[in-house]
Image (cartoon, rainbow, N blue to C red):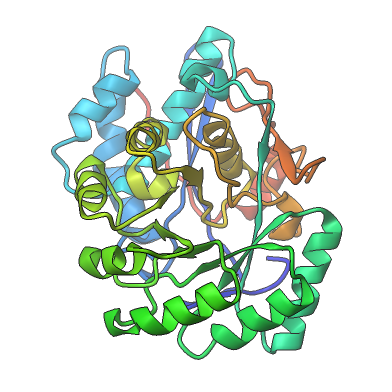
Length: 357
């Protein structure tokens, strides 16, 4: 990575990618990326558990299918509890192939119409507050309009206040990744409203729906849920409780692009805006996310910064670059619409396994 990325649950300096490539007999290739990390910090899934499920269950199941489709794969894996990140790695590759088969981009295949998507930048916990303010300033100079700060107990009110003083008109979000106990509601509300934070994301543990609902009640900021929402049932329960006024959709967390689109549509019907979150993906996963963010239900800036924000060298030929209006271009296709750097992939590969029909 260009620099360490620190959140409330740890620091990432390097990223191990678990990729799925599906090849057809007529020469098409579809790529998917598993967003699990090496340690079970954000999620209980890891690259090791996902690799096990892919190798022993999902890929053997897929190659045994006659004329495999998205629907067949989804039906066949529905009985397996969880494993959403592993499922999404296959599902996104299948979507890539399906879009190529129709000669359209993933965006068009899913019903998207935007040529560019608005994005923001997520800023990890920094060594000092002055360093944070300088970092935010550099991103604003690059052209980003929305900034999200990672926070945790002991790193919240003071850094948020410093950024707000330095940039009084900035659209400012914060993300805690479940770092606060539920009794911290009043304290969070005080500094979030005092420093005009637009959105507070996942301050409490994922199952603390009541605490999020109490925080959202009467708040002058949006309360966004991330880790709490994994499927339609969890979203419906959170909506019924009034626990969210914004929804973060991460492809891997919910099990794929189709599920992500469905959840955003459900939230929109309830009057809750959605946006696409990132998981430090390579250009492959980032491309899938950009296509998803181009769909109509997603109305808030996505957490999908330019490639250079994270990696010294990406896995795709033409990295994503920040464009006018704090936007990324949606690849035109067909399929994923990006070219994978095969030489880079060969050099970086540590292990692989092939399944054939």
